[in-house]
Each structure stands twice: as structure tokens, then as C-alpha cells.
Image 1 (cartoon, rainbow, N blue to C red):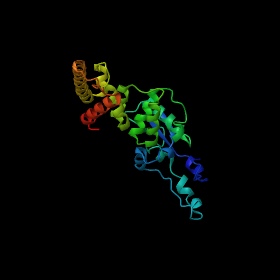
Image 2: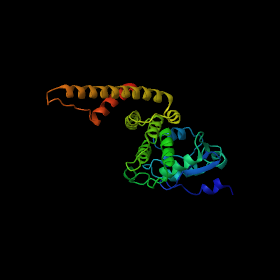
Image 3: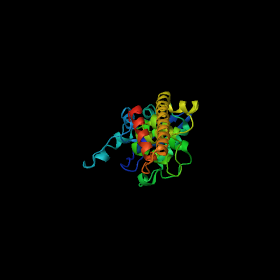
Image 4: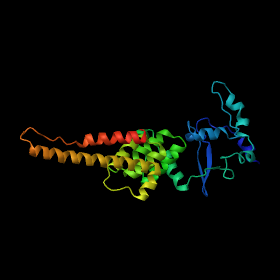
Length: 267
């Protein structure tokens, strides 16, 4: 007896009958619950394009409707479902540009979240920065905003901060505005020159703008030093004992650097 004939004898529970979706990433199939993905994300729009899904939404206020809709809800032809994208292993949703490792990381973070995940994070301890970066990449691409915010917090904790180069690289790629100025400030005040490899990571435009800011800071530092020397000589030749020098504080120097960065990067 055909499976569709057997299944027509029963009704699907409204709350506890889980629909699934099958994805193909590289050469691996993933089958996961569909409902958690049906948020205001890119997946929701994709699911709306699915054709042939014969599941019927039933109004609970209509008495007997579930029983009457039993045949239409369950009795769809199995061969039809196998031709609908995402509903079988033979016709999965393909995710181009996503690696198996990235998708695994995203699913571990997304599927292990708890009811208090906004406060506690992923619901499990991320094992590496690469895992968090994968979650950041896919949550940004697919518009899972809450998961994206959690990934950002895990990537740059106070006890294990990112390097300024990595921070600027990620901030530029994934539009993390709160990271831009701290990363740029650290790079502008670096005593060592930015290497070719670091320049490639942060991008040519960012590297050129930083070079201009660093040159201005270098010139300003030289001017401050000349002013200090001139003031010291003037003090030595003065008979007044009230002649004092007021060097710039680190906070004042940061303000000057921030002003240059804000202008150069249009922050």
C-alpha cells in the first residue's frame, strides 16, 4: 500500500509535527527543523518561493476543520514532495559560497541557543575565533541580527581582544560600526609601519588613508617636540621662575588623532 494512502489515516499535530528542510553544502546534506529559520531573514523569503508545499494552515476557531482537512493536509503525493526544493535529499536547497565548516559553526550556534541566549551567548562555549567569524559571516548574510550581535560580543571579549588589523578587517567587511574607530585609533598610533600583508587585509583604501593620518600625526609630533625644545630654551634664558611647560596629555593626543581619523574616514 502506498505511503500516501497509509498517511491519510492520520492527522498531523498542529504544534508537535516538525517540518524539516534539507540543505546541500559542498558535498554534505543537512536536514534541520524549518520553523526556527522562518524569522524575518533571507530564509523566510526563500521558503515563500517554495512551490508544491501542500500543508494547509488551519484556523483553530473552525470546529472540525482539522478533521475535515486531514486528507488535503496529509495525502499529498510523495513524488511531488521530492521535486520541491528543500523537501528531500534528492532535491536539497543548495547554498553556494558557504563551506561545510562555516555552516556547521552557524548551526551549532543557532540550534544550541537557549531561552536566555541573549544574555548567555551561544548556549555553548565557542572553541575558536574561526567559529565565531563563521557565525558572524552567515548571520550577517542571512540577517539573523540577534545571532550576529552575540557573535560580535564573543569575537572581542575584554580578556582576549582582537588585534587592531583583524578588528578593522572584520569591521569593514561586516559593517561593525562600533569597532571602526578603536581599530583605526590603535593602527594610527602604532609605532611600527603597517606591513604589506596587513595592508592587504585592511584594504588598499583604508591603508592609504591610515598612512596619511599617520604622516600628519608624525608631523604634529615633530612640531610638538620643536615647541618643547624652544620653550625649554626660552625658560633657560628667562629670569622668571613662573615659566612652565604643559605637555599634551594622552587623552588630548587621542582627541587630535580621532579628529583626523573622523575627517579621513568620514566617521
